[in-house]
Length: 136
Image (cartoon, rainbow, N blue to C red):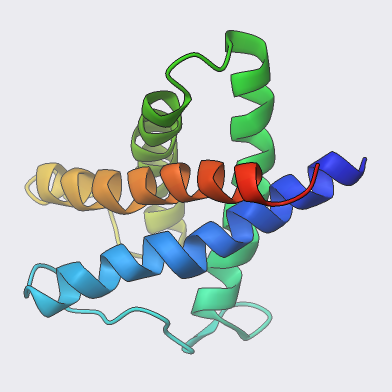
């Protein structure tokens, strides 16, 4: 049980330290129009966006580590980057964006996927960093 609490914390921190840092770099380069660490409230509870993203990062970390436990830890950095980059990005594009009213514009899909892949791959790698440094 305690291990899974630390896995959740690892995913939560990975959003704050890796995902949002990557978002900041993309924002600074003019690739994305929105800045990192947004305190914009999310519906329906009004939780700041960065805290909501961190919570979901913690939940996704539980899934990712459970999958990695099943498929093995060889090349764990690559597997974590691919898990974050592909799985989280597809869920964001297919489920989250439509629920938030962003729609599903095929013309924007490749660019959104690439940006999402970068951000979520950083999250995956960051999660492994924190899993390794936090007690378990």
